[in-house]
Image 1 (cartoon, rainbow, N blue to C red):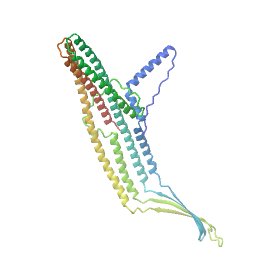
Image 2: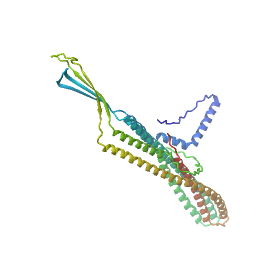
Image 3: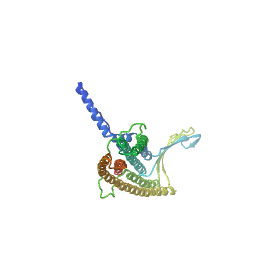
Image 4: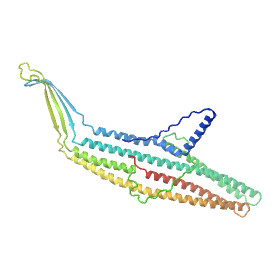
Length: 429
């Protein structure tokens, strides 16, 4: 019913001769290495799609649900009855020695087809659940990936700031030795440096649990190093004027729709099961010959066709089954509406977060340019004994804060775009 498309990577083979061949090999692997580095996140997503245990479990549930259709669409097993008489039963044609009865029951017309249709729709709902879990997994992976990016960039910025504090320490020490500044400036820098070292250590310690979480989502060894690209990019969102039908093809919504259709057919099944079942069979009796007389057809076995009809007179169970299916149809309709509302709410919030990140990044970039200029003037003023050293340290702290806030805005923007990708995902029929 469904075709699962797998990406097959076929590596081309080339004949290599001499030094030119070796150079070509090195060039090929260099290009290939660059492509892998540029598509690291895509590779991680592909690995997760193939190895994540929750995802594999969801697909196995879909496969299991597909096996329900042949079970419910099959006829009941025929019944074979065998009887042997310990004491012969005398008939006009002879003694009856044994009797065989074979009976096959047939549900009312269309019952088996309706059961199969209901089972197939339930299996399709399982497949949509698998698709939704896969898309949710991709969002979770992108979110943790963005956290790792922000953490790595923040550590890098704080290490660069530590180098700047070292230069300030040398500057303040030089000013103290020349008698143009107090020793307290050197102590202030030392306090800032110790705080910066502690912050860096704490951030580095945070890397391990995040990498473990990321690797486990891919079902790979927790200690594997996660390669994070240097820059995270996200696109400007498309402004949709009409979002009413935006989520009608979302896997979570389609899955509920398939369940609703299945319950609608189960109403038909309940109605048909309340109709009589027909049974066709044959009765075969083995007759022995009479020795005291020789009537016509003496000792001939008896064959008798049979017709059986069930009488579904106890209606409570059939009526209850129809009501149960009707209530489930109503439940699926309400759940579908609730799911659409939840997706709509998440869409609006994600769109806001994406726009907010764009505006904040633009603001921080402008402020960093102005703060950099102001910082140069403050350092120059301190060197000339016209600026207090506390202003230099405060400006440096402000610049670091703007840099980390920009990284946080990039992370939030990337995460918001990943959420929008999940919300805009379409079902696969």
